[in-house]
Image (cartoon, rainbow, N blue to C red; front, side):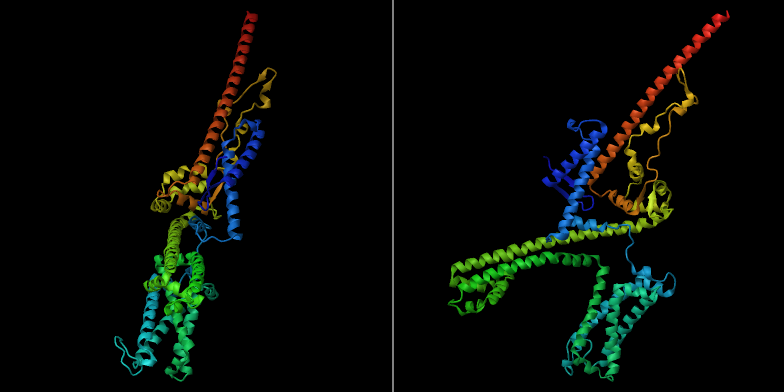
Length: 559
């Protein structure tokens, strides 16, 4: 049995195997038998229609995807990331509107204009960066233990109390003003509780206000007593977490952080493997070096935990490796060889394997972020155009609305910027908006039959113009619509830099098959109409001959 190899249209993952081949073959047999019964042919003839093969292949791929998803949800997890699945997840709900806190702001007013301004966001990031630098300067030069002593390379000493108080109050005022502007910009003040960043910043600013303004007043201005509140000073370090907001302005940092988060699974398994190797070798060295002649070896391997620590530093991190190796060579050459083997396994193999996994993860995350940026760019360019095209505001595009695409200059500009071939896009309209029922034969609905009133005892007669012999075909694609998600996915696939995939070949085969079926149906229709026309011509000729014969008889009788 040949192996069926398909491409999952959502995950893009090529899959093949005997299981899918069996499922596809079973579906083919059922579809072939059903098709043969419908057409009056025996399934033993071996002829399977092309549409049945395509449907069976799609059903097999769908069943395989469901089984794989069930295994991922209920079965053991996999440490290796699926980049195709990550990219496919980006396309989920592609037409949905992404969350943006500015959508919750007022539409008019000075405050909302300031809060939506890009300069306001950039200024906030600058203040956060300066505050982080200020905290480093405060930790370096404003230590109460150094009071009365000159600290070199510091712009201000501990005794410059006014300098430190002014700086703290200035940053507290700036952060409070920034939070107040954002709060006043919300159209509904309760909506502020829906924004995670606002709640996070509110907690940090509240702690900042308590430390800078409330506690000094409560302690009667005795700022030095704040140094005795060690937990409070630790809370000051939480302000450094606001630097996370800087990641949003640097996409490269976002990619690295997401890569670290995704790779944590692989790192955890690698560390587990490393601990197991350390534990096994530590027991071996502990048992062999309990009575070592060198007291340093007895100290390094005095217990299992100490042996694991020594092997981790010397064998994994390669710190002081030469000293441990020379001591083991003097003690026992076999132990020295085993130590070298441990270095080979732990440091060279496990660590390099981890590096390879991390490289794969970062590449997958980078590909996903690139795909996400592409989807965001396409949505930003086309969603306004789609809303303009959607005249009935039902979230879908009909054939008539699609044909109006070339009449909108903004649509032509947006598609041109995306690199989409507009004539090629418009040529796909017949295929995109084709009803599934169009696959049925169209001869029965278009055949011309004589009217009962045109029948006499000598056979049928036809009245009216010859144009009535051919009835108009049914309008294709009438009534079918396309969702915004399907349209955006199609635009992304039609970009010139995309490489053809198996799914594209399958769609091409379906398109050719439908075109072939339509051509055959029209040829059969033409043949049927030609036969009817020939038959009608014979009837007309017979009627003419009868009329001429009657005319000759009448003439002879008259003479």
